[in-house]
Amino acid sequence: MNESRVISDMGGNDLNETQQLWEWREKIANLYYEVRSSPDAVAAWRLWCDTRSTLFRDHPQSPIELADREKFEGPTTFSYDPSLRLTVQLVPVTPERTTVATGVDGDLSMHAFSRTAGLETRLGGELTLYWIEGYGGGVFLPFVDATSGTETYGGGRYLLDTIKGADLGVVRPDGTLVLDFNFSYFPSCAYSSRYVCPLAPSGNRLKGGVRAGERLLISK
Image 1 (tube, rainbow, N blue to C red):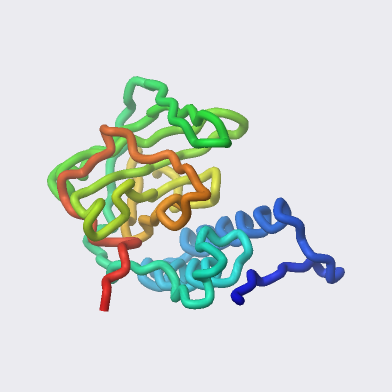
Image 2 (cartoon, rainbow, N blue to C red; image 1 turned 60 degrees about the horizontal axis):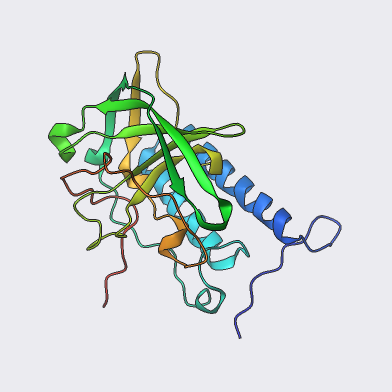
């Protein structure tokens, strides 16, 4: 029978569920710090892939169902595509509020604060960045593209979710932002019905296919 790895503190005491989640968040935050700090985007992406694979297999807060973790080899990704590391200009938008239901966690409110300029030619659309409201807040960038439902999760993927540590870097002084779609990933609800995740609003749908980042497993 597959059992989740038990995490203990320095004194040998087992961490409770809340402490385990805290440790998971710390590991994700540290990972993205390493990604942002690396001068080599491909090396940073490999670290991202390897670290997430280890966490998904071994950590008790993994979204992978316990019975499936022993054989889980890690999230499947497209090969790194440097052409999908894109610099966009952010332009202000009307701060319209959106509310989505997230199951037992209640409703999630967020408002648009910027729109990209520079993706239309490459990906067939532009994306809106959202600020999640509530204590502290955070940037959220979900999207759906032409691969959604066939090559990638039908509900779309996330690129940024800074509340949970998925932070690839802030806006530059000239108002541009680097969006590296090779770091796109599935929400937890793609792996388990235990989760209810906020998905991409209707405006964040790209006509082109983003063949970078996490993808569905190809049957051999």
